[in-house]
Length: 480
Image 1 (cartoon, rainbow, N blue to C red):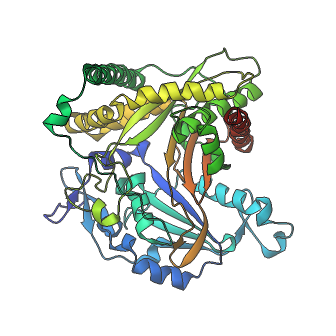
Image 2 (image 1 turned 90 degrees about the vertical axis):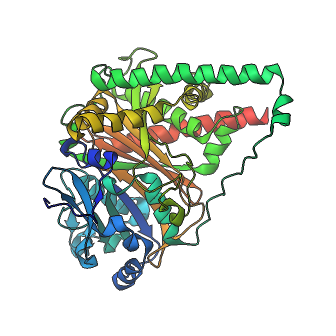
């Protein structure tokens, strides 16, 4: 929508301009499953008074001024235009079925989940949000007790949207307070010994070294170096190919059991180990003995670069000078995993993942890629930032994200929620993995190009089997 800018308009952020570019246009899909049938009147009434509707991004149009710059402009919100209600049941292919066709259809056997997954997979390709209204929709699948929020990534990143979810829900744990770090005085500092000072200098040296290496690799990967082609590789134009969506399911307590097997290991280390093992299993299944040991597959993860990375109350996120401000505040980091045919000890995957993640933690890769994006946007404009990120996605194998969700069951718009999961619209990579924890469970949404990966359910099983083997090895190690 083209219009003359006004003083009340708010300019779009650099990351927002990236996400509205044709090749990197991204919509976030959040799937919420209700325990009870969805009451539309209750849902609309609750939504009209919710923090989401009061947020300026959710009641603003995206307009472009006469100079080609995008802005947010407040508008009157007609909530009925944002509700899309589907009364009919869907089959596993995501198509509508009549009442006479529902015999033998069992949600408890996964038919309902498969139907919803395919519906969302179809939305992920060639279904942009209309620009003549604020960039969000709510699809209500009444027969499946399911709501699918479609929110354009230009409105905010996962951190911002998760803060809004927390604020708009009931029966949810308040995020843990950020620990207060006391500043030590000069007298206390003088008591530090030389060993402490040498450790500090060594830490700074590692940070500089790893940052230089990883940022250089990011630039090189964005320009011309790409992963070796495998049966799961995507490429230029693959974002337009039809998609399938499957779900891998885990228990948070199992992840924690594996985490305890190696000191100072994190949940992210376990997830990366599980991805490495699962992809190796799948590749060995599709192409037995065709890939050499140690083959590298590179993923792309978006990392929150806010000064305060913890989830905050929405009021703090909306403060002008907040260290956890609303928006798209993230940088990209490359996540390498390596193909291994397995062995006697599944925890080797965890050890390798921990080594790599420890290096990433000591670097400022995400911060510098965030600044590189803004610099290129300022100097060359959104066209070149889009080309940079699109090339990066074409040269890598997968995208991965992981968010911590509510610790207990919540209610949304007056409905108790049994399950929440999310994913995004399609990318040039053939596989995207998005993980969210909720009430003691972790679910990974696997969005794949179905002509490249025709069996995402088997890929999900590979990840589940990988975690199971690591858990059994961890139990044996923890008992020893």
